Image (cartoon, rainbow, N blue to C red; front, side):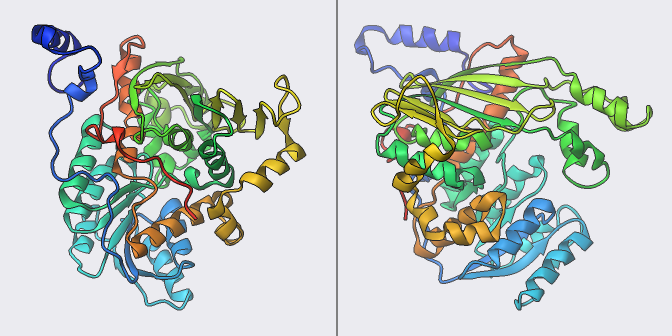
Length: 456
């Protein structure tokens, strides 16, 4: 832990309390280190209903501009303001609104701190943040402190303290802080969630999540674009830098933060090789990518144990020559689902447990277990695009929950616990894979929080 007593001191303190505590009543190390609440819990947070959702956007590059375009397709949305440090980029989204017959939103383009002027407005209910990672926490915190809901791209934070700052601010302000993990709204992921909720796989014991995606091409975005800032992270950090796309759905399958929580983890990284090779092959010898040193291992593997004894394997690799995968594997006592390619084995439903059902054999499963949310808006989402429709479904649900005063499908505790894998993996890698404790961001509320239901 970064603060407070270490584990040895904790065990001494527990021993000193001695005989008065019955077995099973002792707090876990993470629970003993949990800071006091900054305000009321954000578990199940319901905000007042909004007749329409008035939005501001911070960052409208490749990712943020897509959010603007798709929000214009959703009923009950007003785009009030656009903020970006690059004026042509901001004006492109302003024009996109006008081209759709909407009033031109106000543009804020006067430097990296100009978003604060936007937050002073009283006609914005929520802000969508799609900026470089290091800006996510300060912008989300400023947004909530300004009385607005924060919706932030992944990962929500890159330090343990940053995760706590998001939690504390959401609790203190009673404003939503949702990390926009779009993969939770994919057709496959929604269906598997439905299967888990109906007990198809039996008791869930193990999950595997990954983000395997060859992104070396981003290194050509030297002055602007994702590669211009993301490449720098590979030069100064070593761990799992992008865990949430694979982890988010599996965490929801396994009721993480809602009946169970991640307890401790261990992480190891391979040597760092491929980005240096790529830089040497594609850039001049005096280019900054060749002058610096890449220290982040090409592939990172982390193992997590939950409080209830279940296990998670989380992998990350954004550079090796390998086909894209998120794994999306969930194993229970009665069967297993795995993605990339989609395949399933269920005792009593599959012809054999020795071979996968896949391809056309999956149709009966989709016919029986298609998530009702996808049934409701999947066709519209597919037409809208955005990673096969998952982006549209996510944004649609955000607007629906805000307009109906319902809790969000993902809360600030999910944002913190899914994002914290990154700094914890860095700490474990730096210490020969030694286990590190996962903070209990819910402050014990995971014991009573209800699992995410099958929304319609």
